[in-house]
Structure formats: C-alpha cells, structure tokens
Length: 235
Image (cartoon, rainbow, N blue to C red; front, side, top):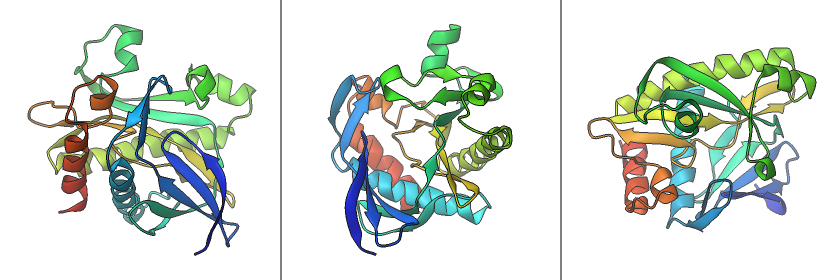
C-alpha cells in the first residue's frame, strides 16, 4: 500500500491518501493536548501505544459484529483504514461520573451510574466541542434520523463490549468518545479507541490510567499508557 499526500493533520494523528481512493493511512503521533488544545505536550511512544491498542480494540469489536473503518495495522505507527465522510457528532458514553458531566451537573467524581448515559457533542475544536441534542443534529443536517438511531444503538452496544473487555483485565471503563463516518452507504466506527479517548481506572484502586494523568499533571503518564498497552495487547 503506497502512502501518498497528507490530507489532514489533527492533534494526535495525520491522515494520508493511498493509491486506493477508498483507503487512507492513519499515522499516530506522540503529541498530546488537553482542554481543546490549550495544554500541549508530548507523551513518549504514545503514538505506537495508541496504534496498537486501537488495532486490538477494532479487531475485537469487528469479531463481535461492530463494523469499523479498520483494515489492518501496517507498522508501529500506521493503520490502514477505510476512507470516511466523518459525521460531525461525537458520541460520549459514561458509566461513571467523571470529567465535564461532574462540572455540569454538580456530581462527585467516581459516582457509579445506574445505567450508561449517552451524550452528543458537536465536533468543532474552535467552539470547544459543545454538547448538543438530537434537535440540533436534525436542524443542521449533521446526520439523518436513521443515522442518529444507529449512533445511539451502536454507542451503547460498543460500551457493553468494551466494558466487558476491560473488566477482564481489571480496568474499569469510566467513559469514552466515539466518532463515526459514512463509507459506501454504511455508517462505520472511525478514529481510534485508546487511552487518549477513554477514561480507564484500575478496577481495585481507581488509579487513573489514561490521558487525565497528562491533563492534571498526575505524573507517570508514560508508565500508565504502557500498562494499558500490556494489559490489552500482551495477553
């Protein structure tokens, strides 16, 4: 597979075209950012870890019927994926209160929720990815009514699959972000599934094992990313 021109560079990945118009290459960077780019830095070998963890998670989800953009892992830093028309709606699923929901609703971090909460956010960095609802999605034509149903159903299904996967590895899946896109008439899960976009806590101690360690200067960032990598990819 030939890597061609750069199509896009984001905070954590670079997208390249290939000699196949239906496929692109995701290159994972070590760059780290938080609070919508206000805080920036580097997490050593983050790109390699996120590529490996995401590849493992996509293959796991595919094996259980959840369709993704994943084709194959090319090397330590690159993943071949199907080219998507990205739906500008981020899906966040929460099992435990943490992050922005605590600030919005005055909840104590760590509160277990009686059932998962699914939220929508408008994918727009300059605006800070504001929270939206189905009326916004409809009025601004960000997704069809059928696609919204798919986002909700798939988000909750993926949550259950990931929750069970991580529980077996003594990790609690607190919450996570998903992105979806269209490919040849199908809605597929895209982007990545890694410690960058998932809150992961040690099941016994509640020790954070994700990008919150970078966000809030908790230290041992690289060590916890490596721990997640070994638990997920070295079984």
